[in-house]
Image 1: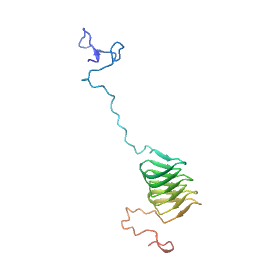
Image 2 (image 1 turned 90 degrees about the horizontal axis):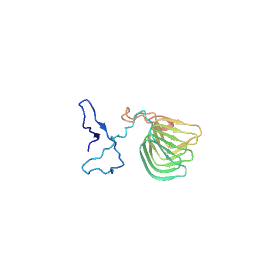
Image 3 (image 1 turned 90 degrees about the vertical axis):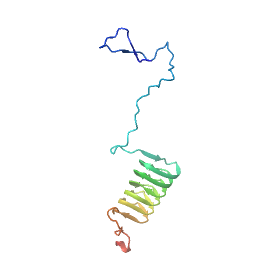
Image 4 (image 1 turned 120 degrees about the horizontal axis):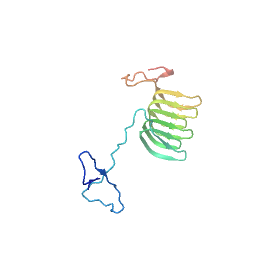
Length: 176
């Protein structure tokens, strides 16, 4: 089936005119041997460095038990029991409670975290925040009024310090 109307008197410089694709007098059935024309494939674009990551929210009236993994930011306003491992930011809202270990780029605690922060580039403990567990981060911000029970290790780049001899544990605040 041709997609253009061929006139009987065509000259070499003349182009054929397209026909109408939908005609009311001809049924819309196609022969089975013909493959349907499909729109061009448009792949989903890969995330770009400048593009912001999406954010997932656990609402204040929700309680979830499980594991969170993946790309993007996570904001918890309810209760979550399990491990969090995201390549993005984790925010624990005031009144929220997280029980489990955490790995994220940036961790902001305004609620309560019971568990260890195993790896983070930056941790911010806000005035209403409470952390019960150990913390290992590149940097740490602590607001007046916040609470923490556990050990904190920050400011050390383990990649450069191969033996880990500069940890800040010892008596009376001295390094060992």
